[in-house]
Image 1: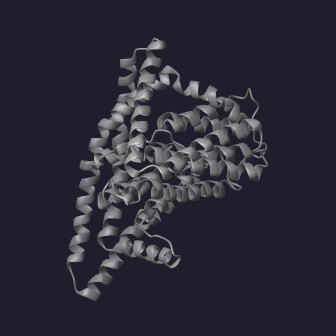
Image 2: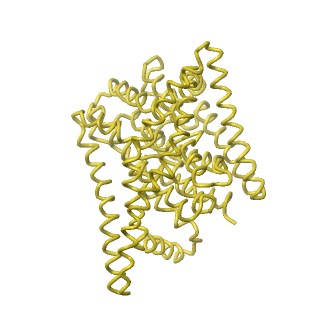
Image 3: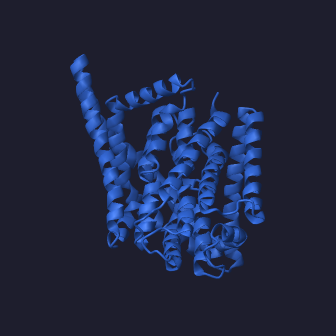
Length: 437
């Protein structure tokens, strides 16, 4: 799931629990205002100390340049890509790909949510939501998630307090496990990456670490037996696979790693497309009509994100043009240097810091970082890993808990932020393995 405010802000606004989302939006409001105010203060300080009035021209130019960049260089080219993939994803939905995946992972999820009866509707809704999220089907995943939360609420004896099952559900959602990061690879392609899919394998490893950390944290809190043979088999098998890929990453040459990740990513994408189309033929659906029906949402989806993309990119552009971003990065670099650490990763940290608050804000940070440093730079690639290794914790919690009237989160926020932190650390380590010279 990503930050899809335009539709769901209206949805949640009509609920009695809307103040939960409003509080979260106010936090983003303060952050957005702070970008401008801090930029102005830094610019004034620069002018007073150096007498250079050109700093003000730079700030004004940044507002126009980044507004144009957001629409002409990002949103418009993205329309075609979104149209293509939403059409293909609709074929996959109607072909039953999500239901097929849910049958595969069913036994595993039954163990993670012991409070939910095996025959309860919430079980199928949970698996459909997770399957859709892993495939990047946000339009399908969010309604399914809301329905699953409603079903779990019917089993919840304390209606204003999050149940164990609901917290586990939120922890997995906020960890952002995604098998196919289409949007990130599309942004890399738009910004001129030589191999847009070379982050596929590293990103898969980072997001898995985030999800695994979130599951373990909640399982320990809920006293779920992680040594159960079903849980151990799934988590152990996936962990060994990811560990094997990491070991391969430490042994292979950078050129080999890049080639393997590119071939693996492109191969899986082509296999997925073939599977969608083949499944549609098997189900005897009109594949072309299914594609057109899904593709129609491509333009409207892109149009919805333009205001958020422009707003955040302009704010970040002004913040950077004033020199404030340099001060922030230099301050963090100084801190990590004092700790005896390499500081090459610091320039990508703004994306990681924004991610728990706003998917659109973090996406803007990622795009701006790649634009500033280069899509194929270490920092540019790391910002992509930060963007994909976790999800918008506060937004997801406010949306799902707000939809059923839960006000007592218990440890849901801690679980989400723990998954975020693990994802950030994993992304840094993996980026150094794959991309650092």
